[in-house]
Length: 119
Length: 109
Picture 1 (cartoon, helix red, strand yellow):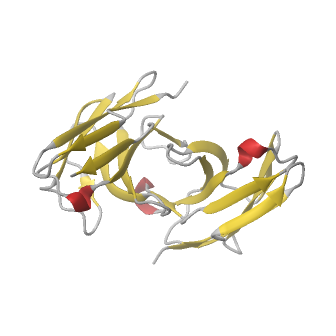
Picture 2: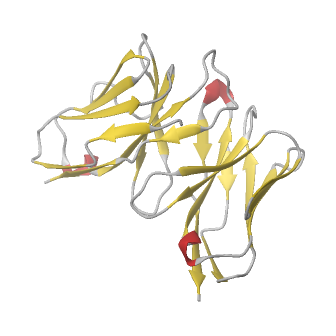
């Protein structure tokens, strides 16, 4: 149980392109999903917290107009990197947590990640 | 502020035991997680501690001391496939997970 699917797994595109990444919880409802970014040999950095039916909460320093997050249902959240540039190249990972009501002692389950390369 | 420290790299021999330490300082604490991450892959959940003491799960055990802001992950009977990064993460305020930089473990024959 607790499977999170992330798609696509790899994207290579030209500078200026917008890229959409999908994160789905396959066998549970996720009221909260999280989006992380990870640079080589560094830890996961939380970008934003996505709550179903409401606006995402962005971490300090993350441009909300550049990284658009939509969480339209209990099983799907999307991250759109708008007008991507080479410095946006990174490993983007989503996670989802089981349990309704915001229980904090449920582990986050991660998608397989999306490796984004902007040429 | 929030700060999580763990060693950058460790090496160990196949069949041995290794302990990976993690110290943390957070505003608010709702539990500590350990994740394993192989290169180029997403993290996978290993363990969760919210009360003081040792949690054992097969070859892996995790310990927590809340008063000391300290945890460790113990890996027994090391296998080559255990070569990976091990991430310590703390649930602080607003239900967010704050990750340490990770410890890269290399297991040698």
